Image (tube, rainbow over all chains, first blue to last red; front, side, top):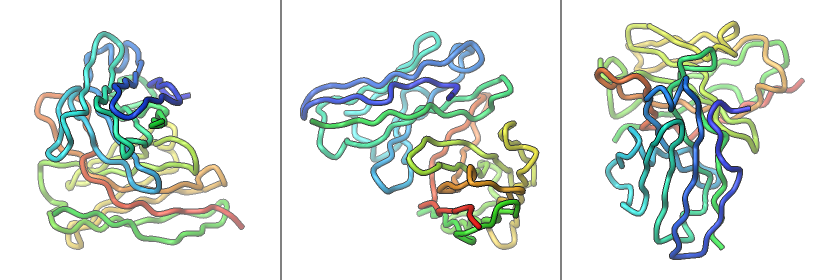
Length: 112
Length: 124
C-alpha cells in the first residue's frame, strides 16, 4: 500500500485533456509539503516532470501542469499525444514513519 | 550535462549483501547544493525510495529498509554506494541512483537527475 494513492490507469484520445490524481493525508500533502511528478516511458528511468506542485523543469512542455489542494494533487496533460503514453508517479514528503520521501503507486496513461 | 551511472553485480544470492555504486560525471558530488539518493523498482511495480546521503556523509533512510541499508559516499571518486544486507527475492528490482537538489526552508526534496538503472536479481 502506497502512502500516496493514484488511480492505476487513465486513458484519453489524442488531443484530449486528462488528469491524474494523487491523494495523500495530513502527514504529507495535507501538511503542506510539496508534490512532485515523474514520467516513466517504457523501459526507461523516471524523468522529473513537475516539481514544487506546479513548476516545470526546463524542456518540459507546457502541456503538462500540476496543482495541489488540501490533501490531494493533480497532474493535467492537455493536447494528449501518443508519446505521452507512460507511467506517471507523484512524490512528496511524509512526516510519519513511512517517510520522508514517498511515492504514489503510479498511474498508467494509455493514449487511445 | 550531469550523468549518473549505476554499477555492480546483476545477480546476488539470497542472504548475501547487495552492493551498488553510482558514479557521477559532469558535476561534483561534493557540492553543498545536493543530496544523492537510491530508489528501486521491482519488476512491473512502482518506485520505492531507499535512502539519501549528503557529501558530508549525513544519511537518512526508508524506515522499512533502515536495518539493512548502508549508503556511503566517496568524494575522491565522485561516487556514492548502496549496501543492502540479507537480501531475499523481494529485493529483486531495478535500482536507480539520483540527485536531489536542496531546497532552502522547504521540506521535501525531489529527484531531478536519474541514472539509467541496473537490474539486480536475487536468486541462488
